[in-house]
Each structure stands twice: as structure tokens, then as C-alpha cells.
Picture 1 (cartoon, rainbow, N blue to C red):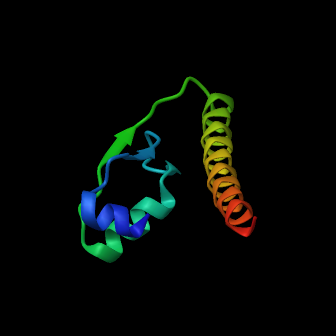
Picture 2 (tube, rainbow, N blue to C red; picture 1 turned 30 degrees about the horizontal axis):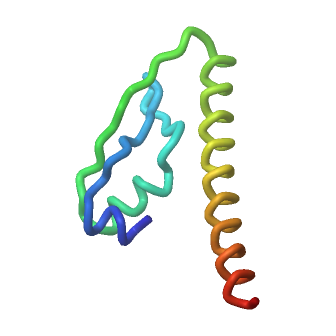
Length: 83
């Protein structure tokens, strides 16, 4: 992710709530700070705290699925090369 942000910039904004609490993008923000890149923020407003929690859970699930997909792809390459 750091290499991508360094070479291509930040494509996905850091999602914050109306109180400036980061909901999604903790790692992207940290990388931007390390690289001296001005991060982009998007304020997301919710009707209640449950809706906000559901959003955070959905973001976490999507990230986890992405990681699982990347690992599966790497494993399939390793298995293919091993045969």
C-alpha cells in the first residue's frame, strides 16, 4: 500500500465521521503522514451510532475479504509453480 500511495497518490479518501473520528483508512492516513502526502478526507454522516458501527464493520469485512483474496492468489501461484 505504501508503494502504491507513494507512486500513484491516495485514491481512496480517509473516511471520518462528523466528529473527525477515523472510521476507515487508519493505515492510509499513517502512510500519507510518513510520506508527507496531504490525505483526502470524506465526512460520512449517520442517523445513529448503530448505522455508523455497521459501516465500520462492513469496511472491515471488505478489507478482510481483499486480504484473503490476495493470499489465495499467491497460494495458487505457489501451488501452480510447485507442480
